[in-house]
Length: 194
Ligand SMILES: [Zn+2]
Image 1 (cartoon, rainbow, N blue to C red):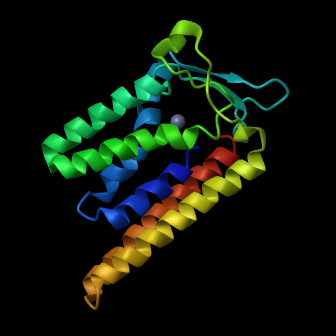
Image 2: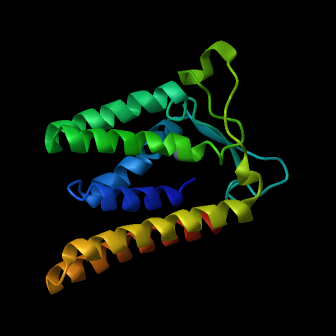
């Protein structure tokens, strides 16, 4: 899952309005953010699925054996939540740590049984992932549903808080639209194989 993570960020913002929206959006993608330098260094890689276009949406066996291992994800989430906690306080840090870990949970249905339990795939334990990416259409619909639902939940909560203050209402609209645009753009780029 890639775009869909943003939906969870928006829905969380509705429940924890004190946490900055940008930090929630960064937290949902934190595992993939750390994946990028490891990917560039060749430590983590994406193996194309035979018979599918290499960059096509969902067409990869992802060897993200550190960032997307269960234990690795817990460590990265603790790190993110811990640092955020120093800056924004304990409650926000906890929320951001949980949101960072939610990335692993939301990736679980999508990945093709390529997510190890221990970092580096140590111990030859079974790899996890239910492989919804085998159906790019179903995956894209699920991601779209997450993005739209999250944006709507956020938008409704923000409007409620904004009350009759026109500046706050405008802000709520802008933040809701930002989540929607970022989510839809991410999904569109994925579907285009970018
Ligand atoms: Zn991921």
